[in-house]
Image (cartoon, rainbow, N blue to C red; front, side):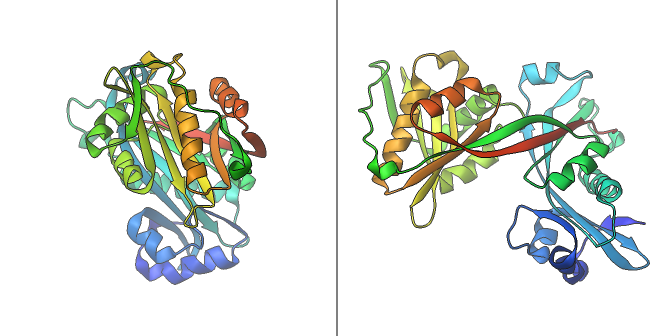
Length: 315
């Protein structure tokens, strides 16, 4: 059962898999196979000339912090390739437990270099395979492929924002100020992100550039040094907001900057007419959970598993 790169000649058959297959998952709704095949790394499974499965992955490269490199058991390249499982579909009668692992291995092999392709100074190339979602049927197949549940993310909402009376923002220190982020700030924000979040979550510079064009990003300065930032996005009708990022450099934590940035986000969302604001965070991030609940956020009951696997260039 060969696993081969997908091309546009298979777009109609892939569409049929998503429309009529028993097991499918996708972050894109509705799924547009032509777009996926053109923009992501995609593979199909073939048997007797018929397509029985499809899987696509996306990836980006980030630079690991020195502490993250030290955590690996072998000398690794400081550049990590994060690989995200974005879509999978199987024909009826197929076994997810057997077939997902086979498709995933074929897709990952396309974007991981062989050891002989690396520069002499690169040693091994890190890659981090990531999936999170609400499709429980994928958990066992991904475990067979070598992924494990490493954490869980929980979703929160603050409703009736327009009816709330928010307290005045008090500067935790007189030498702190907030301002709108500029493009020149993004390198520093990427450094903060890498110091605060694990490789699963921290945003590379290219990701931050995209966020800067689609979100409202405010930075906090302490003595004219960037110490933290927030990023918030709104729906087209501005009735709902989503807090995509709240990060404070570890050197400036404990000063109240997180709460300060959070209240600024709430005021902004309220001024824009948002009725509710949502966010998510890891279930084991107790300081963040306590902060969000202290200002009125409530759990939605939605908790998603996060599955990961570290790989190196030679497997």
